[in-house]
Image (cartoon, rainbow, N blue to C red; front, side, top):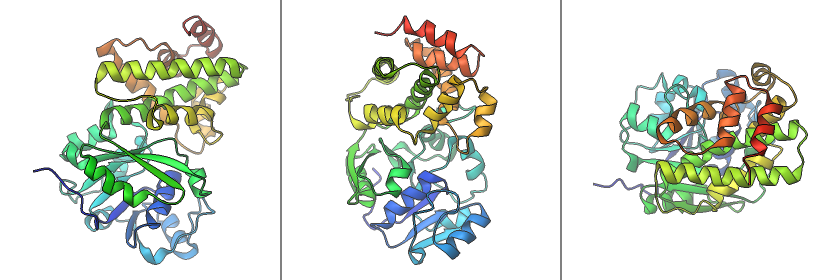
Amino acid sequence: MAYTIEREARCAVIGYGSWATALVKIILENEADVGWYIRNREVLDYIRQHKTNPRYLRDVHFYTNNLRMSDDIDEVVASADIVILAVPSAFLKAVLEPLTVSLRDKFVISAIKGIVPDDYVTVAEYINRHYEVPFDQIGIISGPCHAEEVALERLSYLTVVCKSLDNAVILGEKIKTRYINVSHSTDIYGIEYAAVIKNIYAIAVGMAIGLGYGDNFLAVLISNAAMEMARFMNTTYPAPRDTNASAYLGDLLVTSYSQFSRNRTFGLMIGKGYSVRNAQIEMSMIAEGYYASACITQINKRHGVDMPIARMVYNILYGGESPSAAMKKLTARLV
């Protein structure tokens, strides 16, 4: 029997970073009871006292009477029907490790635009395999939407993805606000992989900027990245999809161009001569594209999709290739 989300289903957000904080803000616009798992006790106590996250989006103030906050993940998950994962993919295993409450009767949403390191799978695939949650109880929230602009209540667009369009519509009602427009899709595979792969291309864009390439070249680089992304998705999982839609192309564009993009910033540092390790130390947030690069390269060994931009990023990050030499070699492949 197909899983149906009830309209009164209660939400809980797992994580306390910038995107998790933004999601809590959005959901509180519509829901009177929202769970929030914050495993850092100092951050939890600070939010309870000062109504704002001391580390991320400090201008966002919460009406905490509507929040069920706890540093006990079992407590938060047990009292929720919809569990929204919003932690960096590199920390997902550690965050979920203390969980003993079953997820099999929950609807689990990934708001994580990254790959689970070492497992070479997306978050949806990981939750399905390791927590036995059927794919009809798994959803994705994606789209060209930076947490910083949500905090400023600038008009943004998100796409809610579920196998059932009816479930996507119900979930969409929980995050639609006067500054968040929502669309719906059933392309779980394509949209989740698009959210992962665009981070690799944003690193490439940052590298190009750091190396001194101009806007003319960036336009060509990003348009080739869009074609490369579409080739990968249509080869690995053919399905009816419009890769020009905002959840695909729009997310690629904002991650490549925005000053808020951590992947672009990471690539910029590499292009300016930082080592990979030093760039990671310098940044206060995770660049998901670093892990995505290794994963997509591994997956593509089975499929052989022509991905010169993704391959260049991998060769620089993991193979030690010179960014200037690798980018110059790439320029001959672009159209």
